[in-house]
Image (cartoon, one colour):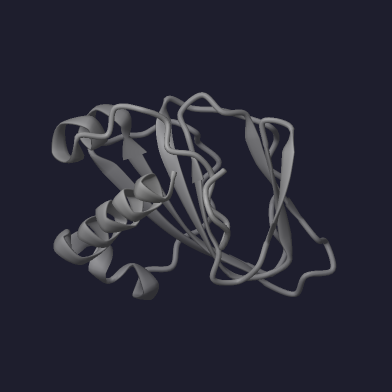
Length: 141
């Protein structure tokens, strides 16, 4: 399992440092987009900061979602597990896993970076062919 964690972190580092679109994500704040489908066949990056976060219902999609919490108090519900997130935590959500954030309504600001990665893109570019598990500042289980 630790090998998978290192492999995933290596992949994320490569994505974040070699693709120019991602380099400036911190400067490109976006309004929350409720869609749950990808418009590109590689990856999409979103940077959201909300003083009053929108409620997101339980959902799933056919791509990987990497969630990085920058600021706020949030728990993530993933397939029946509740994962307490802290700023700086990274969470990987596999394709087809039911999930949703549960944001504390008293949290003054909810800020995060969300990276959607097409399953086929990850398989062809990096050889990932299996589900890789959760990360939340903790080892994979």
